[in-house]
Image 1 (cartoon, helix red, strand yellow):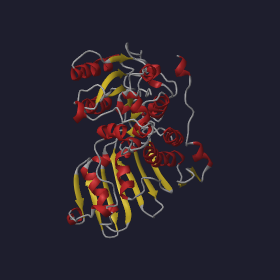
Image 2: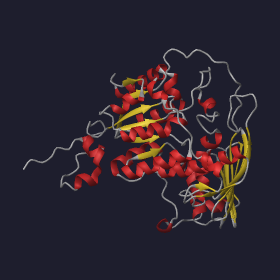
Image 3: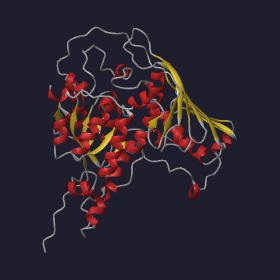
Image 4: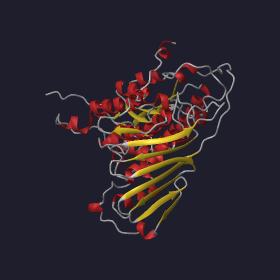
Length: 429
């Protein structure tokens, strides 16, 4: 009897369980059996967005992994593509890396297993959605742009049972993992107060419109964001993050790190706060359209209160029996009593997961094994929702109640701000 042929990509698409139901042994074998350079082992990656973080962190990290191979680079800047392709070809020892100007061409390629998305925030979910629809595994930077798009995307990933991972490292960093571990295991008693400080970002002056540089597709960079004229520093990553059309400022950028650790410590990463209030100041006569300074107060269902301000990165968790903190980004562990960190933990009864691999090997492992990655689409949505609650409360200037189960406010105007209208004509220009 003739048996069906299963290629490497068939295994990657269907997963181990699907192949075992056919009675066939999986055709995708581990590095130790065929060697790191075996073609049947490599997961092929197409990287979309190779700016500062896309090149310096995501691309460089994936290039260090033996079980994947970057085969295509895409960016709206031709100069960034050329820089990244040079690095990829040097690593691969050939000149085969594809130069792709439009991400839709990359997603249409059948020789690419996974899309790595490192674009500005407003593109994260639209592009990740298109990548899933194209049958790709997806690794995407945080955060979402709206609450509604995050919920729709998380539901899509669940429906498709797709492999999706968020580009976040905090749960893999030993200091933040240890902080969360001791709190989750009750070493400071009942969580009462969490204090988060996020970096205060610069104020950028308004600029006059300028000609779009050669080799840059500005319309595609804007994509679903509102149409606007090009200005010289608009596409700098520190600038567009301070513009609400594209991002939510340091609250959704740095907040994705430290607020996540606070929610994990509070055993609330799968939910959201139930109340939020706060104020923020948007700088006058600046390109900034999100608050540069702010003070937010969130209340969780268990009564814990989280305060979030803009100053320097730090996190402090206060409980009924003590406190723990990390001062600075991945900085110094501190506590009311440093013995808190030395207390033994019975791993069989540990109330938090073991510290996972960094986000890049973690994503590849999820493809190989079918296990959920550290940061799923649902985790991304829940984390982003908390940050969006703060932005909406500041925009409306009044306290809001939030129902994590129905994902709705007690305020009609606030409910309208869960979503926004996307520009559709970018797709035809």
